[in-house]
Image (tube, rainbow, N blue to C red):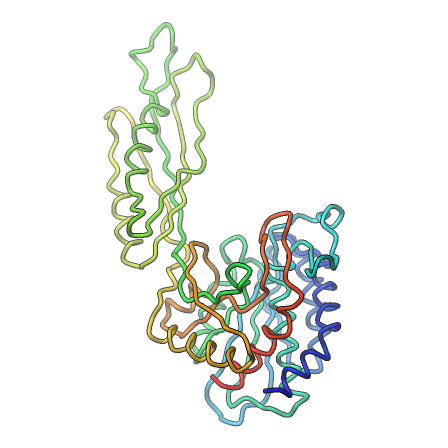
Length: 378
């Protein structure tokens, strides 16, 4: 244990440098060239440790899989998950430069989730250079499109997870304590479109049938689907419709976000949305959408994996707790397949997707060492 801690402590400046390189290699979702630059950077830094394979992600950019170690056993694998894309547009570095200040590293994507990638890379380097070979194969899968719902990478993630014994997700921990994530809500969305009948609002009001008025009635019903006591939330986030104030609106549209803690909650919500019927029979309603990410439920396999992590952290002199969150990650997909999944193993800090995005410098070493021990032990 001390040898891993000593190794990681001695490499801390290099870990910081690698994080800085990645943060300064901006990689906004949807910018395939920028994603490729980051993938090339990571591949070049890991080429002495891993066999690197690139998968085509189409317009989103490449997905990267790095395979570490020849296994002592023929079967079994640990899969680590991360993503290359960030929510920050190109040029953000001008107002949010990468920097070290007040015991933290700052910059776009430093917490979500370039620090987690660096931690895992140096965890693997620690095991390799110390001659501590895991019993299973180890792969790191980095996709190009997690921040936009993983449209091209989900099949790849699920395929890789099906041949894995455990999944370690390098998303940031919860809060400044760095709590690990053993449950995440499922995430989905619906689009409600209403078609009415246009007319002149002054001359022929009664001949019209307002799509906006109908949508307003539907929204009252939809917001009633929220059940805070059960962790089910339904948020009507966007509304549009109509053409002019003196025209009875012919069309209107609402976009809705849903979050559910259990898969059965998602199925029940889908039925409710598809049972919506117009209050005004002259209007027509269409409903599209559903659950995009299934919930990451706190299964027995997840609990066991957290128990191992908690014990190993205590051996490293750190006490960690578990948490649940309303946000989704690619760990939702793997957990839903029944593969034991532990999330939140990346950076410890605050401000993901915000101007104060940062990680704590003094949590780099223990987090990296924990990943090394998990890979070695699980």
